[in-house]
Image 1: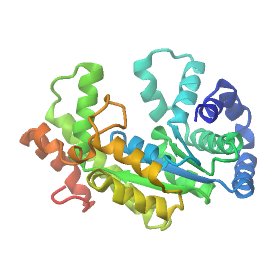
Image 2 (image 1 turned 90 degrees about the vertical axis):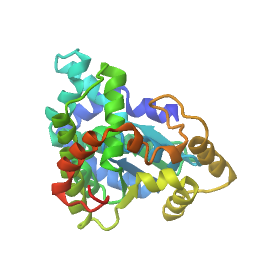
Image 3 (image 1 turned 180 degrees about the horizontal axis):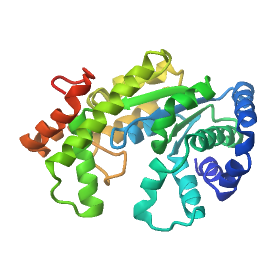
Amino acid sequence: MPGIYNTVTSKRTYYFVVWTFRFRSLIRQLTRLVLRVFKKKVLVVFGMSRSGTSMLGTLLAQSWSSVYLHEPEVKLLKVHYEKNGDTADEKFWDFAHQQVKKDFEIHMMVSIILLSVLAAPFRVRTICIKPISFLDIMQEVSDALPALRILYISRHPAGRIDSVLRQWKRHENVEKVALQKIEKLGRDWGQTTSEIQAMFKTHPNWQWVVFEDLANNPLVEFRKLYDKYRLRWDERVQAAIEEKTTEKDGDFYEVQRDSRKQADKWRTALTEEQVQAIRKGSLPFNTNLYESF
């Protein structure tokens, strides 16, 4: 819904985040109150990049009473980046992941949720937000706003890394990636996944979603999620999900996919040496999510 998205990603919202940062505790309390009074469900989808977060967020918001906000924090972080005197696009993600302080990220996420609830029309009962840059504050955001429904989506490390490699080839013309770098990607996946698994032990209300399950049985698995979160499921929702998961693949960043071809695509796309490098990086973390990884 453009109106809500434009509201929470405007420069005015960025200045709201900056101006209220010193009062972040008060804003947090206000957001809790607004969530309680407005009685809107807020689903927050977390996951590593190229793990199916866009698919999960988009398809959870197919009901007429739901709305999906795609990475609203990225536009605000880009304003923050420029305000810090930088304009080089290639350095933005380094800035976003390494230089922005956690307290500021948490306050920005809380503010996004507050303003999205206030801006949503009455008919919108569920707001689904995917903040791809804020995986590192998943626990803090959940603790700040206990009413949020937190979903985390995982993907097979080889499937996720195959997608990352294709992304690099598309944007950076990288044809060949050293096995050491691929091993590091596997290590990053293993470390992140094991850390998230530890968080789940203290957050039983969080929902762990598996990309391969959604890809192989989209109607069955999404129906389970709709039922769990009491989202309206009807013929229109079913048709929309079926269309977006069975037709010809869309552009690289589009949700439109023949989903059943996505789960094991890596098996023919990666070489045995690449798979072994991923396994070498991820296996020591003992996630036990995927056999031999």
